[in-house]
Length: 625
Image (cartoon, rainbow, N blue to C red; front, side, top):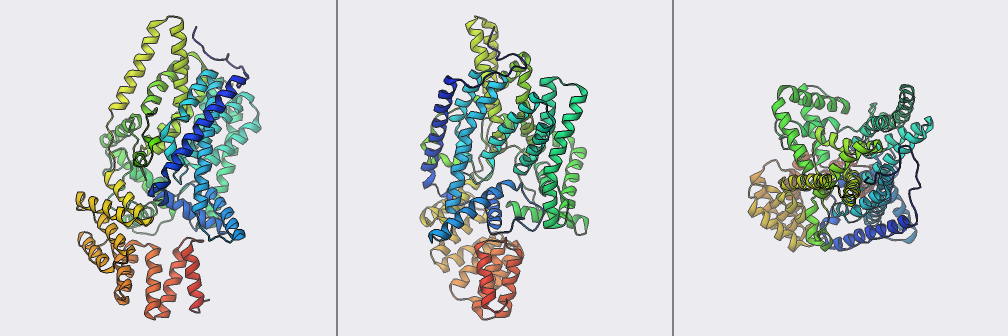
């Protein structure tokens, strides 16, 4: 018979001397490749320009590090745990800078965050091995761990200031804790597991699904009695609610609302499922801007406009949730087509980008360009491995909650590379099952089942590779040009922006980048000309207004600067425009108006930001304190 792993209910010794040596080697390879990838990307300007979700978490971490432990004065906009991780790092490096006399900077803390993520992503090989050994065999675990060590898609996410690497690590750890709780069958273990599930929810809200899916896997793997199911399920729910109540209490203290999860769930649900977006990908409606926090404000304003009254964060989320359900009921064909595209994108080998694409880093890294197992490999071997494994052994059910959670997430919301990544280790364990079973059958000369396994893998792989992917090329060029400008490489930044402006003539954002390059080079006349041209394309573009105001400030036209900066803030609500307006008013000599603008800025800026500290200093200097 093919190797099936330890007997049902057995508790084998999982790591022998051979496995220790093999895992040590696999871990060292994983660390070396990821550190090499980091070193190669030190020349990548995108590394030094956090965008969208990254920028949000950095600002949240800065507020926490400066003593505002609630993080922000509203219901948490995103899952907060990663922000507290960054806050702890910022606090430590602030203290180090204080004692050494070094200038304060987040750069060292962000690099430390990347190194920690590299270690966590590399250490995941041990967790993957344990998962494979517990559910099937040591050989299956080693196979899966070895593939993860060289799975270059995961390298990319270790460098982003995002929770992706931690989501993988802690999802694996939770699954192992679930298996332990299921085998020990003690109430305290299930309470602790519920607390763990709550903590996972604060890391990534969709991982809340691991709690019910985990209970189902336990029932299918262990076949407990009804009394055990009721008792352990209640204990897990108790722990989970205890953890979530802490988050709700924080939201009550910060915003006056008892909200157990973040405030963006309803908004994201509608953005992913509406008549304007049947792509299965992340795409905002026409009434909203792309930036996550601006998107939150736009969705809030649109909900209030439609209902004709002021709404709380919870009411806004509920409104968009109900609108999504209405879309499903009124346009089931469109909804089904959107779900089809989500599933197609999820099984496709192409890594669908969000924030940044995996492909964007390949130009800076030979490691990223090297041949390596991709998602098609994991799916092609993993899916038949899981199916055959379930037919042979109930323990394989423990692998399904992780897969089910990710599939449910992309079906409800949208598909992308980052959402899909945590599913890969579970597929790799399935691939390990495929490899050991197929090899075992080959040794026994059972060629028909071997042919079936190989044929299934080839068929699934071909389907996955055949799903066409589409890069957001304009977004990639925009962020690359902006990153070059941010790090001071104005020549490359302007070159990329100029090329993109020619390729996408109807997108004013590339003209705005050219204006930024001119502004950074103190070529104020050129900046004025370019931003005026951008406003001719989009008369309500707040960025163009802001940069035009800064350019006018540069040539000494303070009245013109104040006018355009005020318009920029009214159009976009970006506190940066308000801060620049305050500076212009102070330069003009209107101290009362400047003082009022500085106060308004402090009221809307995140606590702990450098600009907030500067604004407080100017308020004090102007006699406002």
